[in-house]
Figure 1 (cartoon, rainbow, N blue to C red):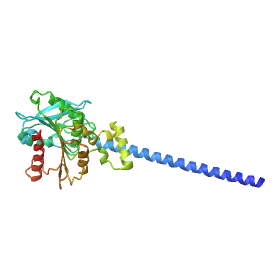
Figure 2: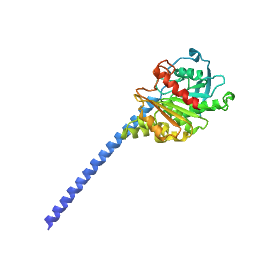
Figure 3: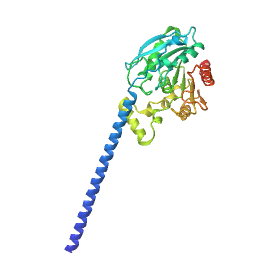
Figure 4: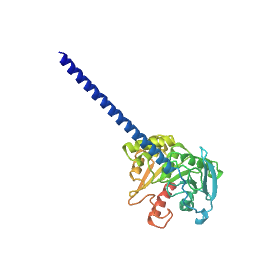
Length: 310
């Protein structure tokens, strides 16, 4: 009887020891996983900070290079960033178009060809250098999260111009500028229409899937203090309705997949139009938007026809 009791006691001790070892192993694994996740999170925050805390100054052109007469306008965003833009008015203007550049390789001066064809069609143009670009201040690119504040300053300035009273204001944005245009129009009822060229629906769609997506969301939450699913063009675009929207995208876009245009169209209102260009790469036009090639001609045609319907 005593031998049986001793045997049972030994087995209990062994089981207890095994349980303790397993608990220790699981705790060690949990600590390693936690450290790995914290390391990945820290690396993501550093990568986002490093990638988007920089300035983009691309073009040194002035309006006179294209035979235009322009004026530099100084503004301040609602969060205190000093901004500059080019105001290129026309006499007896149909209205005004605020032209918004993208993120990489573009600033306001790169888009004077757009101001040229808009001017020739009777539309005044405001080409805005958004934060961290061109002649404006700031060092952090806002990823369409912060730039609506910049566009809001331009809208406020236009609203104060006597020559623009009772005339429509349209936002024309390229790439990230398209997402900014959509997000701005959703919160500003003084915008009468939006033209979005090759925009992304959400930063989420460009960050990957699974753990990579969640780390990206947490990284942006840490640095920009927003939750990306709620700070995106695809979340905001329904609020633009019933105002008209033109979504433009090329099927061969290697920067922002054409699927983004379809996703935006699916949640936009009934007055949203979609123009998909077979074989076109990012931004659709091949020259500068005002070129003589067929791609540029069709690009201008769709923009001006949309403006004409306003």
